[in-house]
Image (cartoon, rainbow over all chains, first blue to last red; front, side, top):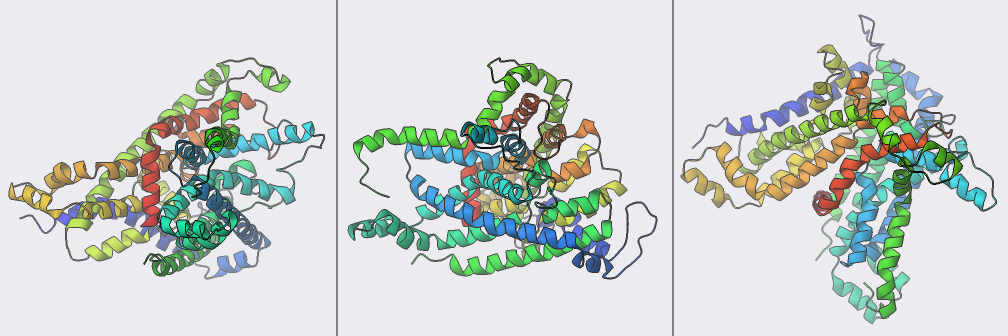
Length: 289
Length: 274
């Protein structure tokens, strides 16, 4: 009927792009991570594990690991908790619920750079909206982005604002899959709102929570844009995430070897998380009888 | 969930929801408001509206150029991304061929692969072939979209094979079947994926930041980030100008969003639930 080559020709464009820009670069990163190169010198000598040794013994690297992990550990539960509460109210198909869903979802498709710029203004020390509000309450101005104790929280707030709508939409899809009879039964048994939420809603959307948990942790470890625009990793490294460090080492210091070693380490971590996700989800997804 | 909503509650609820939504979007809404203020009005807290910030952003600060670049790059990535994903999805859904499963697994695996791993190697390889600071350099690494290929393959598998067979009986070639039978039926799914690709590419930041040094090729994201380059927490001289630039950056997505929200939400939730 048709040539045996047909399917190969059909997948050829996609597979070529994937090979050239995704798979070969993984091998290249691993190779470069064993070499010393500054992007200019004619040779790139093999240095073994030297880049990894330097990285693992540097304060900068462990600071980034700590900051990124802290960001993930704080921001993900806040996101998911808020999202589930809001979603359980917005699950109904009424007009106000749909409008509010739209409003909450909007930031997740909006430019992260724009959001970071707007929130930089919100949290600016002298003319920012947040400080203007505090001053109007008779309180003092807070140097949100210059205080190492506070800058990470600002990043968490901005990221939560951006991502919340996505989490809500996913939770709503999860909630809609929960059979209504279970809620009716709980209502008949005289369950109070908070009680029903804790005993019915939370356990039944567990598969969705697992999905969102792992996806958001993976995403949290790749945060770059908000930090690059708002703090450049500062003050004093207080918001220096792993990808921001990777960008700095690779593209401003042009230490290709160490940048690649950092990329490989982060890659291993994220792949481990992703594999964990597919195993856990593979088991937990079929909860409906 | 709770059936005992009172009559008055029913009337207040829409307004409450509206107020909540506006409050949530307040930073974005206020930034748009600010973009129409004069600088003096902004700093003195008076009301004085102008289009000057937009004229400045578009003219002196090249945002018309950045807008054009973003459209070219996102448009091309969307068309080429959809074309390559749809063709591959068709092959994976309809043909049994040696190595097919392995190739499909390689496509699905890209969903797990974080993009930062290819940052340095892609920069180096594009530098070697002289494609840094070109549209091609911005576009090529962004084309392959494993998620779109996977999503469309699942969708095409849901289309009855009998339709393909009827077309083959009539002497159609595989490409004709794809174009005349599959694509028209899968249009909603293809549309959702097109939106998804366009929006991600429009908002993409780190690769354009790395791949382009020539200001003439900045995308909106890079242009905006460069326009706003002050020390953290300090004030820029001209916030209304920055907000005008920011509004230009989000406007196309904002306008489109109103019409396509449902498609977007469907694409995203289907991806998550699958």
